[in-house]
Length: 85
Ligand SMILES: [Zn+2]
Image (cartoon, rainbow, N blue to C red; front, side):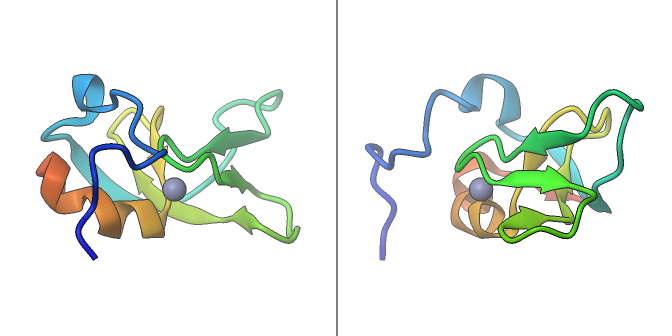
C-alpha cells in the first residue's frame, strides 16, 4: 500500500531525519532519571521494563536522541533515505 503524505505519523520529521544515519540498538537509559523514549513517528514507547507494548530495541541516531520503531523504519526508510550501520 503506498504511503500518503497525510499519514498521521508524518509531522515534519524530514527537517531533522532526512538522510539520517541510523543504527539498530537496544534501548538503555541515557541517564538514571530518564526511563523511556518514544518513536519519532508513531509514539510507541521504548523502555527497559518488560511491559505490554513497550519496545526494547529500535533504530536510533548516533547521539541516541531520536528513536524509530521497526514498523515506522520499514514504512519510511525509502522516503527518508536513511542509511543504516
Ligand atoms: Zn513507530
